[in-house]
Image (cartoon, one colour):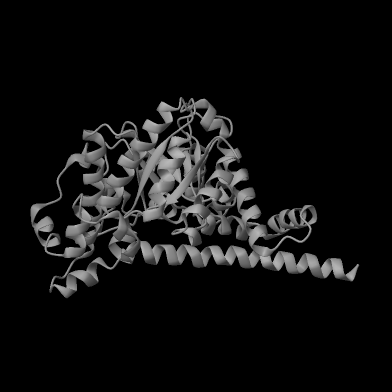
Length: 406
């Protein structure tokens, strides 16, 4: 294990790049402890130093993690990380809100998780002059097509802390919400985004919202916009290989990773060339592919030099920190501007699923809701959210049973 991991080395080569923690900050301490327990004794000192650089209460201005992405499913993991604590929180909420139902309890619990996590990053927010240290709090994934519900939820989340950025899905209805929130000076993170038309649409929608905000003299000093590309969810969950097979085309793991990167790079170039105020965020990262028997990490390697956000879940960070082949990864400067190999692009452009995703006008806003990656991701997130509702229901039942025995 080297003193600096591959994520730290990537940042050194990429001015303007930010690394974000893709989970609730509430679980960070326990995650570090579990990692150290599993590590070989000789690795633990280096690992501990890397953890100390990731998140530091003493030096928040210098820590590696510059922000956080989260959502109800990830907040569920925070609750599962310390059930007794959150059961206690639930009991307090129930005691203060007689007659509360499980859906209302879930939402209040979720906001408590958002509050606790965003509190942990307020010092980064303040030290950076309100430009970093944001925590993305997502509207309920079950409301992905409900504009009124998303706006109501977004305003509640934004009121929690000044560094809470609202995660809004890339559905047809979501872009109306992004424009409205931007017009009010509320920071947004566009999620459930997989294709170039969505990414471009978001950038232009933010511009419209900013125009309204400036016309109304809205305070934008603490405002920010990021646009997420859910890379492997486009390539793997969306069914790229299956769509290619329908055309008699076999895609390798490398082809799939490059398809995702092609969309990301084109979106990055669009924002860069048009000097858009939004910043691209790369998520759903994967190790791989294997090239000549060696494992690569193209989702990192191809982003050197990029002024972007790279959000990393604990599982991915663990893979990178324990990567036995890390010495084989040699970053090349400014790979973000390197073209995807022509032979790969020629193959990919024969697949309509990719061809449309790569074209700026490949989908209309009315078609976003039918995209397979969006539908499958929304479904997964909704089911995970329902698990948090179930937890709230159990807390409610427990409190009612306790009260009935008195």
